Image 1 (cartoon, helix red, strand yellow):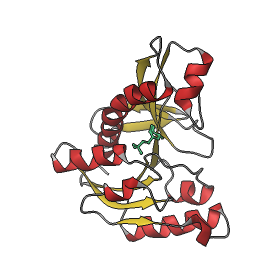
Image 2 (spheres, protein in one colour):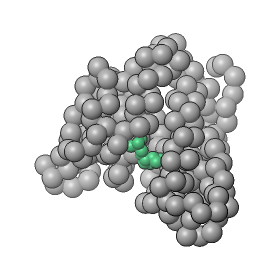
Image 3 (tube, helix red, strand yellow):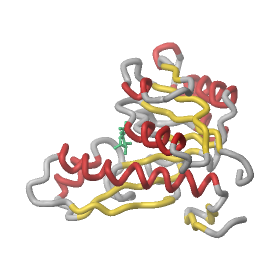
Image 4 (spheres, helix red, strand yellow):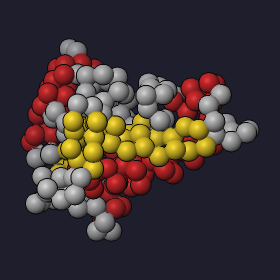
Amino acid sequence: MSDRRLTLGILVSGRGSNLAAIVSAIAAGILPATVGVVLSSKKEASALQKAGDSPAYFVDPAGYADRAEYDGALVSLLKAHGVDLVVLAGYMRWVTPVLIEAYRHRIINIHPSLLPAFPGLRAQRQALEHGAKVTGCTVHFVDETADQGPIIAQTAVPILEGDTESVLSERILHEEHPLLLSAISHVAAGRLRITGRVVSVGGMP
Ligand code: GRF
């Protein structure tokens, strides 16, 4: 993957600020990648408006018998657009082995906690309710486990007295964008090595 621009397939379901950060970084010439396609599981996702010049489609889950069939349709679209790396950027569905096997070690996710703490939905609220003093964000490879795939990079974020879910979410989001861009850059440069579940950032291959 290191000798050419990486083609990204971005899966979204909502606001799309991570997608917008990717599109801006590519436009600014600081991320050596191309957005091949953006696919949304939600028709009303504002992320669909943040794809820049790249194609963006709503793929309606209601049109498929089950999750595996839906993921099969995603794989067909991702392949048709020449996608090398799939980025889950606020994608609100669990992925099935159909997608995972088609893109083994080539799917990454951004999650708003320091995994393995607080997986699943509303991670920021989970951290607040737990009384944690530090949380953060994680970029990890996606495998068959729920939010527990090999960790690529993390940034810690303090929880301050009086934080609400939205204030904390905003503070974490501010750290998510550079973390995700950095992880994509590492993949693009072929710098990541996976041994078991440990990811190391090496030099140039
Ligand atoms: C982010 O907090 C991300 O960590 C989580 O969903 C949110 C997506 O935000 N998986 P956006 O749609 O990229 O603005």
